[in-house]
Image (tube, rainbow over all chains, first blue to last red; front, side, top):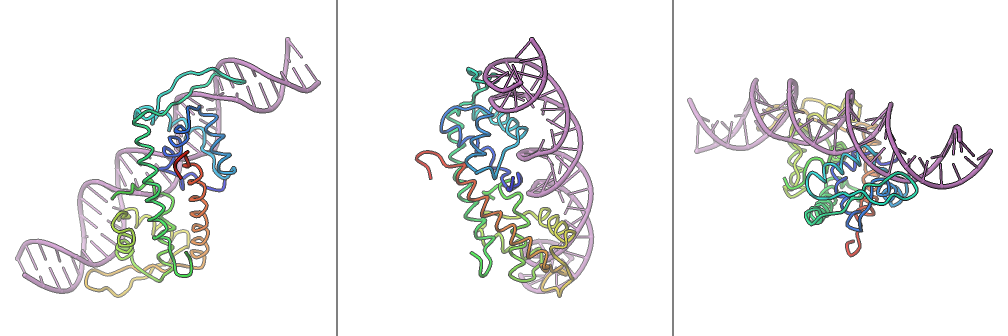
Length: 112
Length: 112
DNA sequence: GTGAAATACCTTGACAGGCGAGGTACTATA
DNA sequence: TATAGTACCTCGCCTGTCAAGGTATTTCAC
């Protein structure tokens, strides 16, 4: 992994919620999607992922249910809730703001 | 502060080094510049700042010296070292990559 | 059938960075 | 003489990440 976890820290929830906005999914799959979307450059560790699920469910941003298992073990699916959607949009906004600010702070002469 | 610390976590060093790339400076001033550049939306807390200075100095990325004080108390100035420059460029690259990846991970239908 | 590999989930404990709270000290100015 | 601004620093808590370890199921080659 070329991008360290601390660089993404604070955005994990946003990533998970944004993925669930596309439809229900389960941990293992979400992890794969993240890995694929980032061309393998970023990977959420399992411990981090499940910690985040727990946190988000406690916050009421996602809801889980046991779903039909495919080729492997049983799967716990997660669905985004209305409050989760709201949180997701807020986090997407925060990400845009973070980018904007960071770009200004990192700007150096002869380097955009 | 509208942007929570965890969103910036892992980028603090990059911000400080990028500022020092513009010339020597001291803690209090760097903090003000950051606040100004971000239009007051982000502010490095003092504890965070001085912790970072210590860390960066131990890493050899910055060097400090006591400088002429202005209207207030004496100032400890920081200068970026060659290894600091190197680290800074690396971190700037990482930031670009983080942005790229995050944008992909947060992409949702009907939302760029 | 048996073992390996892939699928899938979960917990514990350590660690690191951010920061609230608190402290020191000097200067200018009202 | 007190207050506000400048300027630095430390302690200890909190939170999120992650290495390591564990469980259970299914598929497929042998």
